[in-house]
Image (cartoon, rainbow, N blue to C red; front, side, top):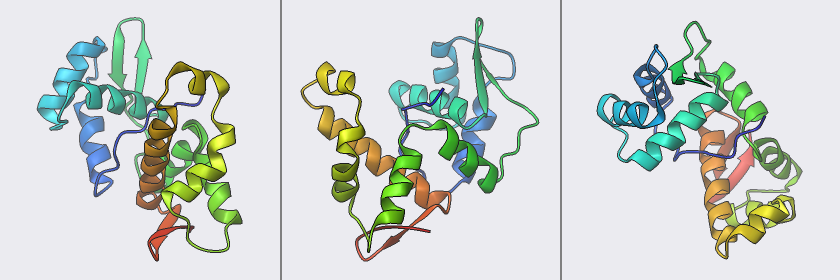
Length: 162
């Protein structure tokens, strides 16, 4: 399964470790986990805490079971391992990196989105009138995480494949 949810990228991968450490070891419900992330990892809102929980699942740092979310212990949290799981488990990352690899120079977020637009599922387009804006934001977040994981670089006002 590939996850679509991508929180805003932090300034450093240390933030991922902080959030991972705030996910409970003993499974707990979503609302309780969100409060914990807000308290222990300084996540600013419940909506962003939900994004982080889902993203932690994508990175293999958290699991969701019948009793709620729990931290995965004994998981490789170095940047390279996280980058691999990011590429494999987050929807549109591989496609974004392919767009950057095929480009002759730096691409803006808008350029990348335009090249990915036809890959947005039809049901996503039909479910809201502002789908394009939400997907531009998603592409922007994916690009920022690609930079953080060393998969892309910012150059000349755009992004290139690293």
